[in-house]
Length: 575
Image 1 (tube, rainbow, N blue to C red):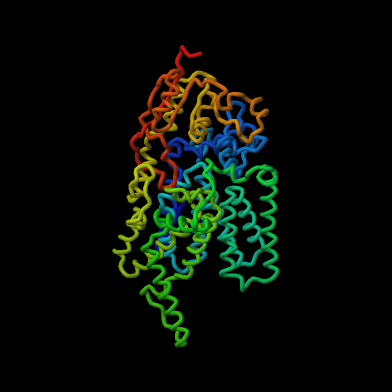
Image 2: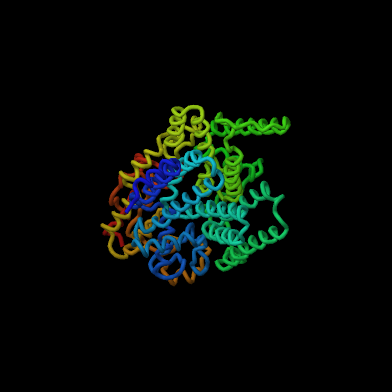
């Protein structure tokens, strides 16, 4: 029987721990509720297709016996048709399918659980670093647990939540080692580093580099020689394991352009004056502020307060006096919080340097998904600011928390623009997110797949010009239709093997029964096909899947169709 009195006393004795637990519970609910609220978007479709193949065939391959998914012109596959992307996301998705069925919920649920676990480790980090400041722990934790952007990433069938989990758990056990000196903690960090690498090559590498840089900044003086040797052996072990896998799938020593496997198009070479690494850093810093991952106003306060705190400490050392700290704010653990923020900044920095994005192209913004693991760490500044304001005025602190937590006003007036509307992403994102997942709106992928499943005959041939739309529709409709024109003549995949599977996989090798065009239809394209195809339907829905998590691409409510989705059917008189 529950001891109500004892529970009540415990809550009164640890009110902020109780509030943190409540915030965690709400975050867990928001991670898991209505995971089928929207169709899978482009990247999720690929992960789900490969995950289904892994479940059914026991291998990470892009051919399911009927259709081929291999990225741009087959570049994402090796000669054995094995997908060369990091494999952990496929195993997690396959496990979800095995438990919950092959559907959106099955694809996303284990990734969401990994995100919840990442929040748990983040809370442990805060308790570990800020044990004497339970209210501050609560303020910092709620900014991450109720971050609409972070929760959006956790609800995706992609590597995002795993990389966040690895960075949080890796940092926790790294600090745990320095508290206990237990070798098992280093072993755990090594395993987590390997897991991070096999979740996302660049993200895992950025995690290891950021922890190494953090160690060199704060711990190199107290590191014994045998510990340096141990650290080196751990790093070599992860590097050897990763290199062996990359050799196995052909990314190393396979005679192919490794970076081509992760490009969506040929963007050419950088020809700018500014060194490319500086350009990457600039865009990273600019967009982290514009997306409200770092509030420029809070950062200014943080820097001023940090300088003030250091000057006070120097003054006390000179005078030889230790004044009693008061509740005026000068006893804030700004250094401890600064270390957490620094780790997030280091991760973002290394992720920026490792990205393969064509950042030199006009209008390119940061692909925030590569940096998502830094988000909880960077948000700690907002929690510290809320605690500082609380010590001045509780009413003012409540207002600060409401504004910084529930809205994107921290980036105002420099909020990043939404890609499809051109408007600043300034809004009440937390409540918009809650409304979206409870009142979902139609999306192009679901609309197109529903139409094809209803009207296409078994083994009809379908052609879709854009590879991303085609691949996610392959997951949804591949059991009914055959997608053609997947590869160009210059595909790196072995031609004899592809033709043995199905010749219509190559462009120009079949007359498709259906053509689907996402977005505005050009007059030239229509003139080329109108003699042989008739308009079957035009879906009145925005052509791009705006359930994508990055804030410049995400819409919390439906957007105008802007061309919608045109679906054409071959005329019955056409041979």
